[in-house]
Length: 362
Ligand code: AMP
Image 1 (cartoon, protein in one colour):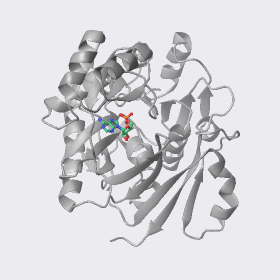
Image 2 (spheres, helix red, strand yellow):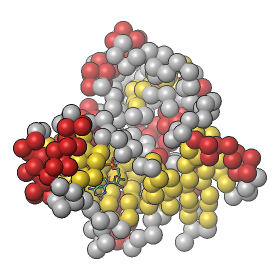
Image 3 (cartoon, protein in one colour):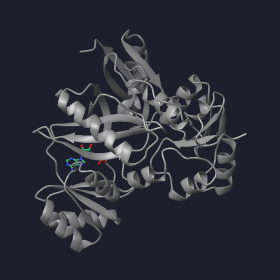
């Protein structure tokens, strides 16, 4: 018997997760610890890191309406591990079961223009931006935001894809012609650091925010997260407050990742939001009272949150591609908390696992 949406789901209830990657896997493991069973819906034929640790699995395409309906009817609540869930997919699932986080969070996070408009409407700073829909608006946007700017496709960009740094009107028009897709131009931010904050909101409105962390990227992919970020305590408080305001205004249920730029004069600008657990929150598995994965499962199950307090300082390093071959060295390191995702084929740029090292709390 499915449970009513407003109820707290009891242990043994079934959590449906869209997406079969490592985020789904770590969500499924957290769910299992609380006694839930997990049903993963993912199209992947081969590697399915989440499916390997879940009770049930549907292997179907995200536009297979019959499979989506069967899946929704077989679970008690639906969540997802990636933000590009097609609107139609979310709509079908939501007509049968509660989808958490909800449609508004997905709509805002899937398109950089409404995302920026939403953040700005809360009085939170972003990089200056303008919509680019044709050559004319590309030129006008550059005149307004140059001499250095970044053109980004509004949808489906990730890990630096669908992005180009531009430094003239001609370059902006050229990049837009290459993208062939509605875009936005952002003024270039000469930031001091990139930071992020992971926070959760429960169905009854409770909010827990983790300490702000700093992120280093290599080849546009997250390489290292340092927790906490080496910033003034006011910056930490401001970042957590920004995340809390975003959560409350989206009437959000679940974990969110908020990526920000810290400017050289201490201002925080929101770059983007991810309506899901986030790579820069993996350190919470080993360094906090409650991991981001447990918080997310608690929230989607209608449970209250637990403390997001950090008991250690931490460094999280992604194991990408051939880094995974160092497993024997890592296994011999007494201070390394190792997490492999069970992916069988190593490919360049593929996230194979991560390692977290703990240090005394400062
Ligand atoms: P995004 O896909 O929006 O997260 O951007 C990927 C990376 O590009 C960010 O992590 C930054 O390092 C860089 N970046 C994005 N937007 C800007 C900007 N407006 N100014 C400077 N760097 C940016």
